[in-house]
Each structure stands twice: as structure tokens, then as C-alpha cells.
Image 1 (cartoon, each protein chain N blue to C red):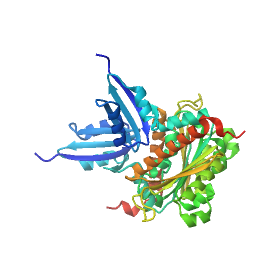
Image 2: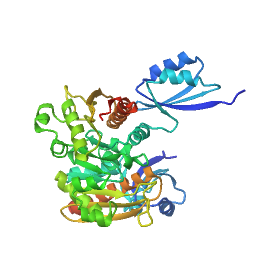
Image 3: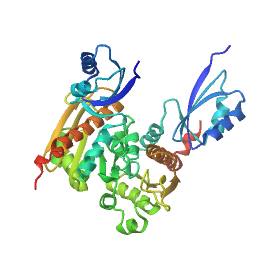
Image 4: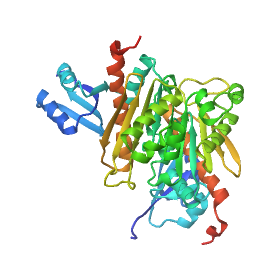
Length: 234
Length: 234
């Protein structure tokens, strides 16, 4: 018998159900284990022979790494490779995004810093979110998130600013803005973007889901805009 | 036989060795388990009859709660009770202190926000740490930590400002300032204080040790300065 092979694939943006389905399409008898940390998936495959090319191909759009890779280490590597500086404006994640980014040794090479603004006053004072925006849309909204991202980019003079604002719960939700509503925005010289989410779970899960998605947005943005420097303004 | 009793005591500031010694003084046959998360200890006692008064008395100076209490929930309760607002200036902990504080539901009642300043420019610009201080003492020093704490208190107009600056490693250490050197400072209307630590461990452990100690400094400061002596009468 050939020795057992074990491989760990790191995936994001795929449900466990879809992943299981895809794995069984590749090999009916595939032996796997899924660890799902709020959408951040570690897939361990143990088999006599792993159809690694087929697997990679099938999971390409969700795969961000292997083994000990993390969303923050992979994103950090990209920032380092492209010589970009990052700053972070957090509200509902309360510092967790910056904490994750700075878990990576050498992150001071690309992470300049961040703010946690838990009230409107500091969103206005530190991040220059306009009072008009805060009055019209409140602390949780697309325009607010976008102004936070561009505000923190300006505050730290970084290449990229990323922001998270939402309602982590358990209280503070309304019919219009329920617990789990989160906006994640990114500001750069190329473009500004903002995604809206409705996360489920407890306070800590919502924080982690928001952080995982923020890291993944940043990773995809870096790959899209810097991997093939077609957008580079010369 | 009487039913088994199980109690969880939460402790900080005691080594496992000293704790074991104390427990055996109370009862030679005591049945216990110690979980130590970078100094934050969960002590589970299972016995026919717990000498709870004796235990409480013996461990009083280290005990901060029971059961599901955490350093951040207990500290948060004190801030809420005394109607105080907090802000946080982080460097080497990279957001972890704010993240822990905001894991507590309702923390927006007392946590105004924070900054993560990973370079000297932002320590000066956001927290008004003087360039003279940064030139003389660098990013990691007592004076720098004190200026960060008073700076963030001023920035957020909070009652208390707390700061952490240090060297989380694995690189960045020198003979004078080795990896694990951390300063934690607190600024309030009563006083300013700063503690110096030399933590051991990996980057994530050093971050967590710094956060645990910052929370405990804040807890003890609140008890020392705000606890109404009448509350002690039971």
C-alpha cells in the first residue's frame, strides 16, 4: 500500500454543503475533514492518492492557501510584495481586524495603524466622516463605511484604507438595521468599494465573520489590482 | 455520599506553582484543575465539600471573579457601575486590547474607542506623543507609554486612557529593548501610572499577556480609586 497523503487546503467563500458536494464529485470515496471558523475553512484531505490538480481546479475560486496559511498571512504577503501600506478603521469589530493583521510577524512593514471609533463623535473627529452623513445614514451605512475607509487612508497616509461598521449585537438592532448588518469598505487610488452583509450568530461570531470577510476583500482587491499591473498609473 | 460540588474561580497575578501550594495548604486531597491562558487562570475545584470561605480568603488578592467572568467583563462592569468612559492606545498589542473589551455586550456604554499606532508618525499625529520623547526614548519606553495614555484620553475626551507599547517580536528586539519588553500606562484625573514588563513567549502570547495585564491594571485602578467603601459592608 502507498503511504497516506495528507493535505490542508485553506478556503474562503464556500459553504460546507457546496464543498462536500464538490469533493464527492471529484472522488466518491474521498476522506476529508472540514473545520469551519466563521467561513474560514480548513479542509484536510487524507487519501491514498490525492487528485490534487483536479481539487485545485475545482476549488480555485475559493482557495487562498495551504497548510498554516491564514487570511492575514496571505494578505500580508501580498501587501509586502506590492510594497503597499495599510490602515484600518474599525467600529463593530472593535480592533479584531487590526489584531489579526498584527498577529503576523513583520506586519509592521505594511500595517501603519488603525482606529476604533465606537461613537459618532470619533468617526467625525478622527476619520472625517461628515456630520451630514452621520445624521442621514447613522453609524452603520454604506456612505459612512466609505467615508471611514477614505478617512483612515488620509489619516495614516496609507495606500489602502479598509473600514468595518455594523451591529454586532446582541442589542442595538432595529427593523431597518438588524443585528448582523455589516458594511465593509475599501479605499485606494484605484477605486472605492463597499460590500453589505447580514451575518448570523453571536456577537463574537459576527465580529469574526466581519474580519474574515474584510481580509478576503482586501486579498481579492490586491490580486485584482496589483497582480497584473495593468491598472498602474504611470 | 454528598453530591460533588464544582466551582470555577478566575484568578490573575498568581503563578501555577504558588496556586498549587496554596491549594494543598487548604486541603491535602483537594481535586483541582488549572487552565492558564497567559496568566489568566481558571481554577476548577471539584470536591465533596469545598472550603469556599477558606479558599476565597487565601486567594483574595488574585481572585477577580467566578464561572464565566472574564477580565474584560469584570472591568467593563466596573466602568459601567462608576459611569466612566474609556479609550485605548495600542501599539504592540495591535488592537487585541480593544477587541477583548468590545467582546462584552454593552461595551459601547463605556468604551469610546481607540487607536493602533504602529509607527512613530501616528503616535505623534494622533496621540500627541512629542517628537522629543520619540527621539529620546523611542516607540517603546515609559515616557512614550504615558504620553500615549494621556494623548488618547484627550483625543477621545474619556475619563481614563490606557496604553500599551512594546516589542512583540520575533524580530525588532535589541540588547536594551529585548523582545517581550512592554510598557502599560494609564491616565486619569487622579493620577498617571506606568508598569514595565518583560514577557516571554511567542508573538501572540506576548500580545495576550500584555492585554491581560492591561485589563488587570485597569480593574485594580478602578477598585482602588472608585470603589465606594460602603459597598464593602456585606
